[in-house]
Amino acid sequence: MLFHFKDKFPQLTPYLDKYKEFQQRREVPAKTVLLEEGKVSGNFIFIEKGCIRLCFNNKGTDKTVQFFFEQEGLTSFESFLKNTPSLFTIETIEPSIIYLLPKIHVHRFMTELGEEPGFLNLIFELSAERQLHYMHEFVSFLRDTPEERYLNLLNERPHIIQRVPQHYIASYLGISKVHLSRIKSALARKK
Amino acid sequence: MLFHFKDKFPQLTPYLDKYKEFQQRREVPAKTVLLEEGKVSGNFIFIEKGCIRLCFNNKGTDKTVQFFFEQEGLTSFESFLKNTPSLFTIETIEPSIIYLLPKIHVHRFMTELGEEPGFLNLIFELSAERQLHYMHEFVSFLRDTPEERYLNLLNERPHIIQRVPQHYIASYLGISKVHLSRIKSALARKK
DNA sequence: GACATTTGATAACAAATGTTATCGTCAGGC
DNA sequence: GCCTGACGATAACATTTGTTATCAAATGTC
Image (cartoon, rainbow over all chains, first blue to last red; front, side, top):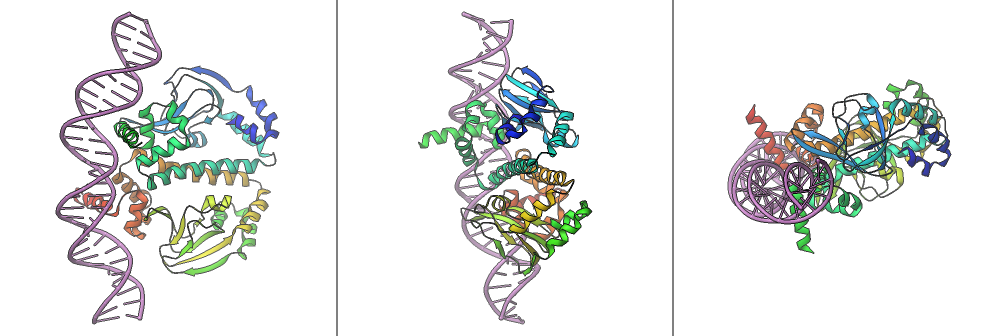
């Protein structure tokens, strides 16, 4: 996410470069837990290579909330912001190369950039984007059948379906892995 | 929403008062459409009295996205922000007294307040709140059964269940009105 | 007060979805 | 190369949820 800023706001580059040194590079295997449910999130995570999911355990069953890929950043947002126990686990799906930026530096970063003209708009835009993302997810549950939700994913974010094991996708769509399998075979028969 | 600001940020009061004159007061009966799906949202709506819902029509069936009550403000956010056709309808549930603030003034308002110290944080906090709200709604669909979703609503926002007709609540929970009725009677039997 | 409209409960049946179990394939670890 | 575990397909059955229809109660309108 930090490096994403550079594309949209080149004038921020000096700030961003300044924080490079505080980022800790790590190479981790698949299925590595980067943040455990119940712990307080202390880092912002940037993905150089690989694939990570935000998930949680509900009465023994695993549910996926979101997927993240190269050049994207994530954290357990609410926990990071409010220092509360995270509702979510952060776990790699593939072997990954990541950068960790400790919270204290993110705060400093935000404060310094607050001075920068246009930063208010940037923050506003990014927040609005996130808000609309989750709202659309929510609306999709009201509006769409599981099959439609699968097709939407296939159309709008096909890379997820290509890279992520199917049972994670099923849990993300809110259905069982058996049912997702059925949906796929029904679609194959239709064609 | 505008007036909500006063509680948290008393220093903003002069700004807020300045915008009072631009607000248009209206008294409208129940089931009045304030913004139609497909039209571009031109106003921010503040509720003095009554109850309003954000909803949409999906293949002939009516779905509710959110409920709003006294001292709350709303708009079709994405449409308002990007001047795109609204995905949602805004409709009163009860006879209501509302204030409309045209978009142009909201923009001026935001620009003026951008100068004010602490405004960045305010915007950030409000955006984060909205983001977390929709994220929690989304997660609830992954985690909870319809019965649990109903009980959550009953615990966390009982005023909704008290004031809003049941078929709107059913559509908001993502289930049919018949099923909500069943859930209620099942719960009554359990007690 | 009479009437229409809205709201909510319930029953009967149909469709969608979950659960459990089995099997085959594939990739990674040793 | 062999084993093991992860992954995905499928079947059989159970459960949940939707649909349609009917009825009763409450509410608003005239």
